[in-house]
Image 1 (tube, helix red, strand yellow):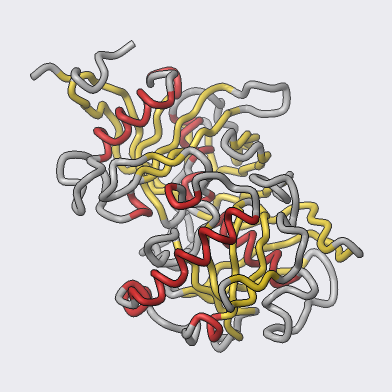
Image 2: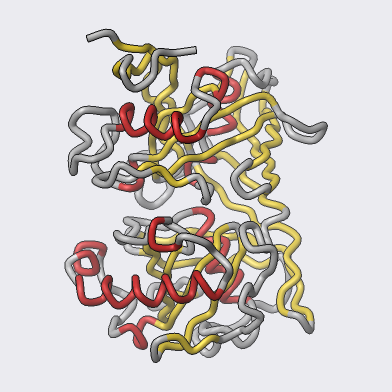
Length: 363
């Protein structure tokens, strides 16, 4: 059987990992592209045994890079979430953890030239139109991966990558509160439908029959909760103006509980059909923003910070994640200037991934 070879870099970005391609090396047509990504990842099998996926939603993600298409951006980042067991590809969301690897990958691919000391990479997140500035540790030879920063959910330490997100309010729906309400009562549950970096539906854990401190395994075993959550998510997504919610990973779902380990607030985040083992970067920005917005389901669970910028510490199943939010509260809700996080990334492999020529015969 003839196969088509596609160059790629395999990277861990934050608490996710997957292949990073040059967009020009892949089909332009999105339907054809989906079939290529399904084949490369091995979507359709719980272990992704016939591809390079890792059998979990955080390891079936794909980043596609190209030179910036406007005067501001150095690189365009196009993201695809490939399903583990269903042969589906979702282009609606972006992924902030995979974004952590975009700066290093762009330098590795020669899209951006490395500077001595640190390289600023301006990234356009194509899926949602957001702008992000990544500061990557480099020297004259390229990316420096060694460092002393640890992030919960990843063993060891690595060089820090500072991500500063802009233009993230209404990333998918055009407004902070897509339904026009701070609280919506849907299927007997109070929720906040909010769109900051990622459209989300957020509830109080206790209203969903949870404590908010469950482990990932405990939550994934609670199929009654997931069945209830999915029905709620679909109706809320439709009210938010999102199409084909049942077949999309957006909006994501999350729950709040009062912090108990020294953080600002406890969170659990769903992808949406599995529990995230840690916390998505985009989800962290959205949940931190929701916590800061007066009148949301987070009211009464945290002491509002004194000023801005404020560090919001989210407690997740594997530890914590810090979000530095530059904001001000207005009569209409929240005016968000930027949200910043520290992540790490590491190049794991490079070479060529192969797909059957019957799937795609190449360019």
